[in-house]
Image 1 (tube, rainbow, N blue to C red):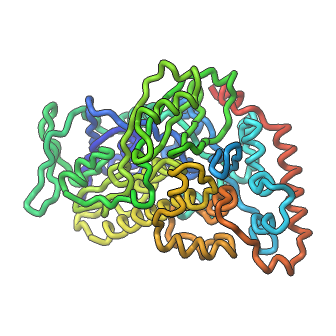
Image 2: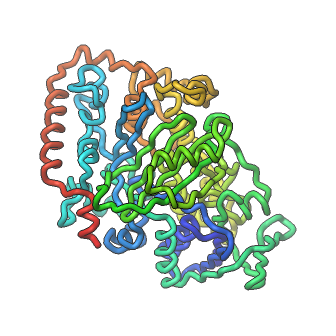
Image 3: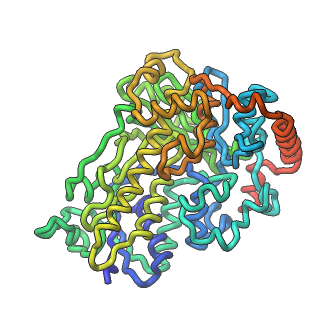
Length: 516
């Protein structure tokens, strides 16, 4: 049997892979993880999709087991500030879209919404976030208990299989370095061999397959399947196997970031349970509140802004608390490796691909890739079918997310700097251009969004189109012939539920303090 797996690179990608494979196959495979003692990790991937809960469930970990150790908090949405105009904000929440008479509530909102805030009229979470509240009561009970109990029929499903069956109301935010440390202990305790060494050479056989790794500290390491988690370097997949990289920079020009980890008194500050993306003159700034600090960074395009100016802007944005904090400047490789599985090497994480972190897709890509590897784990005959299925799944997810992120810039009404004016004239994928024309007269649905699984349901597209304000939209003509009474009652029920929850739910900080 093919049972020797060597993972090259630690960090979030490496240790998530090691922990998941060990949980999936237990002692039936031998796993070695090789990580450098000198090469650092990017370490700023702190926000996630709501699907990440399946990862922790698969490992048998409860929130109280790992969240305190990782300074983790809840993320109920992405909050977009200043994308339409300065002072404006809206939420893209993790919440099931309601429908009335076969039409999404957002369609009814376009026809005759109660206010000018689609997110507060159509979702409960927007007001919960504004109030800085936890989606769980102090006793651990979730807002809607049915979300917590998936039932036996939901167990063991992959992320793509879960989509459409339920919508969990939150994701997580955590310190990436602490999560890697936690998963290191988890994996090593269960038998993963950890080797601290620098890979000096990747050895290949006559076919071009990897036979081993040459290290200075531990000699030669051999295996059957090699997993490349070496980040943007792509040490195995791109350098040793020479697999080409497909750039997305023609449509997503942001290629740089500067990040700060800012200690703060979170009890005094309070925790807004969301990731905030605040538009700037040449990009946007993320703000992620954790227990004990705030993670923040400016994502920008170097053609429009220098690293020095980006850092000054970020420090000014944060204020005095950032004065003595060391900045981490990052050059991002935007795009994907053409094939993430080549011969006996599988790339997971940044070596596979990356888009800017606007919708927190980095850790989602890792989790999805690990699931696909388990689903398509090769046998001794190395059937090419498994590689083909894996590569198709990874490329579809990456290409679909690319389209979704491009939509943010095309749909944003803001046009006050050259950077934002150029977002309206830059080339976009042909398929997205066709879809936008359809969405102008009919909001996105499963038939008009990207056809392959990529983690984003149709309501996510609705939120971006409605919130950004740069594309004129129309309600379905059929609504003019329909009774709007049921929709108005649904709006009223949302208002009533929102008022009840904001009176009952505890502050987010209080919930996490109690968890500790």
